Image 1 (tube, one colour):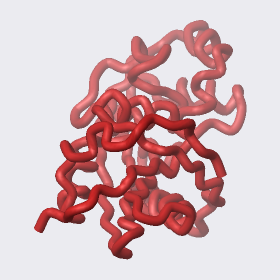
Image 2 (cartoon, rainbow, N blue to C red):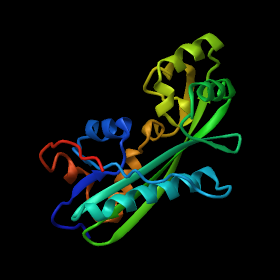
Image 3 (cartoon, rainbow, N blue to C red):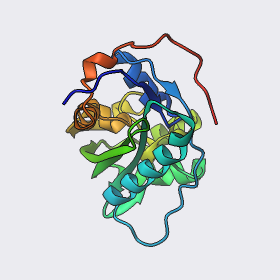
Length: 210
């Protein structure tokens, strides 16, 4: 049954890409950065890992946001069975991008949505296949020098300066940027919320960090 009384949507992430996707799709979410420790012990498969971290982020923010829908997300690239997050340094970014050259990987994004008014939680992990091009060492160096790869899972994105270095994808492009809108729609529906009812349901405000 569809619920009555619409809650606020809160993005538990400081990702500019995720915020841009939500705003472009008609939402005006508040932003509360979780600041959680993203360390996970053991050899955890990438798809499971992003789900755990998405839950950790949403759960850290949820107590601060009554009557809200708190969305936590985490993205990592699975390449040759290894999870690749954000590069630790410029040198690491260059090595990572050269390693990806000509290969195929899967970008996994975990989505965890908490209804703080009713104490309900739902989650889903989405995967998108990435087919990488073959940038030259000079192109990789120039890209790394921009600083952009330091903020991206796998050191790249399909909507920034690295777009020419990606030959194609199979799956949801938004998922590669960090948030799958079709997944969000399904999660909201499980909580009895129609996604169209959340389009600009509250006045724009200044994002809040914590």
